[in-house]
Image (cartoon, rainbow, N blue to C red; front, side):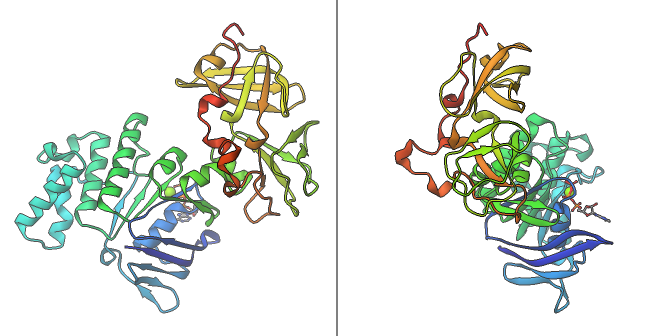
Length: 399
Ligand SMILES: Nc1ncnc2c1ncn2[C@@H]1O[C@H](COP(=O)(O)OP(=O)(O)OP(=O)(O)O)[C@@H](O)[C@H]1O
Ligand SMILES: [Mg+2]
């Protein structure tokens, strides 16, 4: 069922945890709330679940008002039919797996036979049917989290609310369960709100990502658009864009932008829009080329390797440019691994990979240097669609 949140505010004392937040989630949509610790993700979820008493605004689920500050509507949590899964494994250790999953159905006074069938079906969905009669305290963390998920799913909730359900699990299991959750969500057509501060999880699980900052939604977009076109430098930084440099207020139409703190000019592809004030140039580490020979073209600079680290399928290097700034570079695994500290290198950045972003959303607005809509197939395709190999560095192994 769809969820409509309108102008919702919730304060704890003088902390505005949720600040005039509006958000529509479509029926069957997976919406991910992504943001830094303390930005108000859990508070927003608790309002939807009915566990908080918001100061203002309204919430409807499937068209039915469950909260409205003006008219005084406030439906009790257990009457909202929302499924909750939290970070801690909230399973009852003294019950078996199937007793845990059956519990909400018993509360709803379903027939005994129906309860068992439904509980087993749900356990099948999360891959735990073979453990139905095992004591819940004997399960691993990942299994317990699946039980918690099955218990919520068994009640056929109108909306699933998941608050960092995977954050207590180890990396491998987290990735497996992430894929499984996405499959379930699509298969069951579940409407869900999923909270995380892990961008990989958000990109994998969302139909749309709502980036929260200070109790508000700073950007609402598909995973692809969020990744390609962050709305501000602070969002870009949160999303792992490691190279962010403030620029001196640029002239409208300028394509050469001077960094505010270094004697260096960066060439951008699209002319800077009029009205661009305080802004930064932003470049993803995977868009920086690394070579041992001087490279031709704009945005090529010499520098020295400070450190390079092996990361498995890729490598990261930190390069101090002679002109002052330090760049984070992501390369093919064999390139940066071959580099030593103090090696001399050259970096290059395609002007199409430089984004000019305002410091904050709602700040003096800078247009992105490369709006997504401006990508046309005949210019060789969007720079970000090029395979990683095209950005891979070409430094030789002898470096
Ligand atoms: N019960 C409470 N009493 C007082 N302040 C609270 C309470 N719960 C949350 N806050 C404050 O409200 C703000 C939002 O908290 P919230 O738990 O919603 O953040 P979050 O985005 O879920 O963070 P995290 O990623 O750390 O879980 C924070 O500043 C927090 O300190
Ligand atoms: Mg939280």
